[in-house]
Image 1 (cartoon, one colour):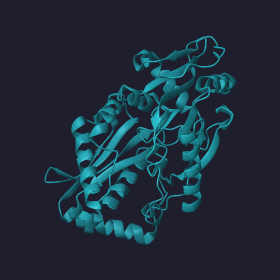
Image 2 (cartoon, one colour):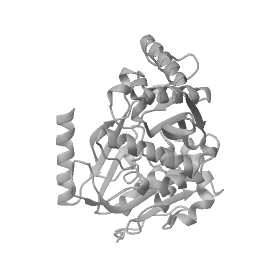
Image 3 (cartoon, one colour):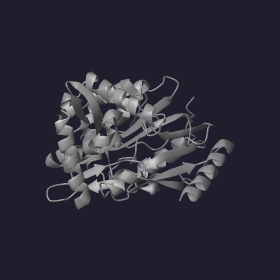
Amino acid sequence: MIPAADVRATAAPGFAVHRAPSGLAALEDGWRELAAGVPGSSYFVTPDWVLGSWEAMDASAEAEIAVWAGPDGRVEAVVPLVYDRQRLHRRFPFRVTCWTMLGAATDAADHGLFPALPHRHDEVRAWLRERTGRASLWLPAMAPEADPGLLPPGTRRITSGTCPRLAVGPGIGVGSRSFRRLMARRQRQLDTAGITFRWVPPPEMTADVLDTVLGLHRARRQVAGTTTAFDSGRRDFHLRLQKRAAPGRGPAALIAEHDGRAVGAVYGFLWQNTFAYYNGGWDDAYARMSLGTVLLDRTIAIVAEAGVETFDFLRGDEAYKYRSFGARDHYDEQWLRPRSPAALLAGAALRLHHRRSG
């Protein structure tokens, strides 16, 4: 069960704690407006992502969202939390009972933060400190712009994770001259092979497109001999993202097709001036034509034409992000306040792993 707060924080007018996602529908637009104005915010802190994750969450997980609103009803701060057992790293099999940001762990969200207007920071800080009480607090991927002053005493940064980004737009070249020549050659080869490309913006995303992406991703992982959390078990969550999508906001995909059959896909999320590349896959029969790289190159060109300024590769320092596209490092941070032997052990192991891998 969610532990009771030791002391009830002083609630300003318009303060409420919601313990079911259904009660937040009227606040979604205001929440999006708030998130759009907070430095460092991303699609992963919008109501689309957070409420979608909550609605698709296992019933055993207990969650709540604190909302501060002004006298005029304007949403001024949002703190989404879940109290559950979490694996703090894929290399560590044991789970830790802790508070964490709703939507961050289960669905691998990057760039987390608690959106709040400056004049609400003191209230948010006090409530978050008192609400999490003596339990452990784990924040797996916080944006560097997030205000650490909002976190309870004893919360420490234990690791950082690489999330490369690429500046895109008119007049901005992607990759080296030799890479551009290679992409032009590969595109001609794919054209000759009868491969066509279809962009699916957020309002046009459907369950069929999602299933296509999931199938291609699964097939690609099988060829690579790796596992993935982006599978049919998260289908309901991603369908919920589609339901909240609007022009310029939400899931989008580039699909490569041959004779009406999908052979490749890139899947990600549009939010403000950023496209976040979440996942994808392609038929290994087209590997020699660099279909995966061409898909990414075409996606970058399409979103740049639509006004996107940042192509976010999200977590992972895979060589192709730098070698082929010229991405630059950006770092998310992991924070932990351990309050149990398991959390202390996990924190020490994470720090050791980070030093060794760094």
